[in-house]
Amino acid sequence: MEWGRLLGIALLLILLSACAAMRPLAVPVVSQAYVASPQRSDTLIVLLPGISDSVHEFEQAGFLWSARRQGIDADIWAVDAHYGYYHRGVIVERLRYDIIEPARRQGYRHIWLVGFSLGGFGSLLYLKSYPHTIDGVLLIAPFLGSGSDSPFDPAELLQWRNGEHGLWQWLQDYAAGPRQPPIYLGYGAQDKFAPVIARLAEQLPADHVLRMPGEHNWKTWRLLWDRVLERQLLFARLPPTISAQRAP
Image (spheres, rainbow, N blue to C red):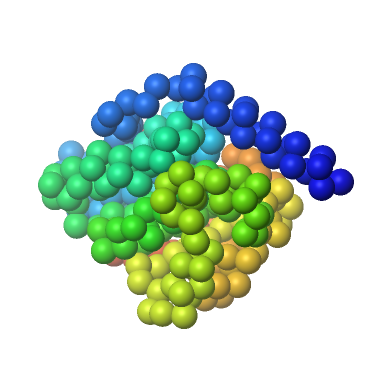
């Protein structure tokens, strides 16, 4: 059984490495901007996709329209932060130098990271390294591996590559402290990573966690996104309503 598990993990890593090799690492990392209005908002939401997702899927799946419908009058940048950046161990620095710092120079006062699956993992890596440069993170079904200390855990290998071994210990220290910037979490009860995600949920305040029926897919992620917006769990500084005519 153990050999079967290790073989499966090895094959997964080989597949991920092959996928990384097929995607070029653009520097600066490419992003798609969606502006809320002609006047620049003071708030920016940075969307980080899953391991094999296109940045255009956020628009195709209705995330942008939903944000406008719920009155989120913020600019949104969807970042093409694919697995290659994690594989090379440069995801944190690319986010800092290509996304966060340019956004600050453009005048954004409030910046939130919203990471989906692997993008959730990247959001935590960034928060651990540069907590004072963002206002908070929202993790949707984050990939966190098995959460063990096994060197065969894909998440642990990713952490080593990114110089971030010990992410779980940091999360425990975060939970024991002031919890700033805040972490919000949403995931489906039937998500294949749910047992590990639940470990993270235990470290967070109850009102920062949203768990609902669903699996590890875009349908569930859209439902979680809608529920987060409806409950006004974050982006509290934003206006509560906008004109319906401005919804895309």
